Image (tube, rainbow, N blue to C red; front, side, top):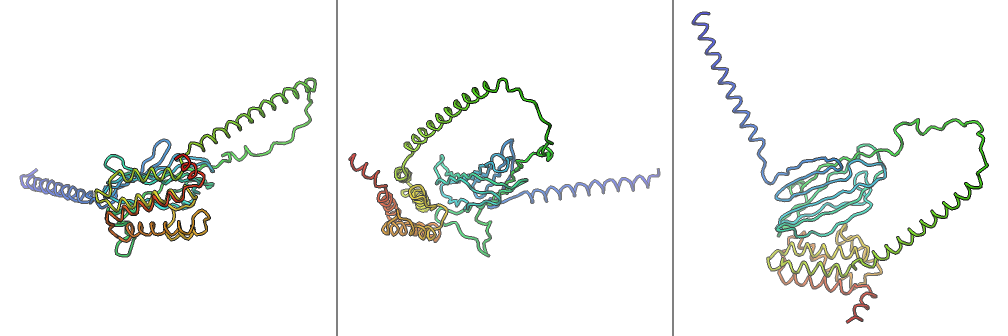
Length: 363
């Protein structure tokens, strides 16, 4: 090879190395730019374990976990859906509104307690029991968790501010629902009738005797189980905390937390409203937590347990709470204390007559 050829080859190799280094640098810069997310963007991940599937999402310091257990069921079997949110005390979280149907699933049971204080953060967990007769891969649709600040209501979506701007939107969860029919269709086929079979009746009388004794034993066990269940059920009902006692205890806890003294008025009114709505559901079997104020007040007019005076007192309280939660009204400390007094008066006035008479007699 001549000296001129070696020189050309050396120039070519140096140019190739320079171009490769520049390409790698561009890829590194581009990748680091794409991987940068601001705190206001939502980060989420869906995972699966041996018996459940869950989605974890985080945005603006609010952690939301949605899980479904089990992830594989037979048609008609139940699936438990849990929605849990953890956030700082200065935040306000609006949990998803779940109707009687969630995609192809029927909501057969629900538990939606108010939020609680866990260390320096707040936590709220709603639980739903689902059923479906559909088979295959059945989807639990995504849920929306609204976000807001302490003195700012959870804003509603608009054209200038899209739905996801002030919310966490969870991922869909897929549940495998298998049919109760056998996979082999021939297993359900009828067999041909066989010919006559000779039966030895020599010990038939003994078989009838033992069958009678077995039936009597089964009947005795069933009767015993029924009696035990009734007694246990009666005991469980006796120890259940009455709705008014639960509400008074929760309001006393809320008062002791000192939210008014720390000027966390929005959080105080939101918590108090949740306690009152939960009390209404426990006491009058009215689905107050799932309805707007106006929807609930229209339904309350048909209830014989709520007098006109009770409805008027309740309407004033709930509309005040809506002004704070949705109209950005900043209440004064005195207004918060008055709202607590109104809630306590409402609970005391709606105590069942027998329990009120019993407590009065004990005094």
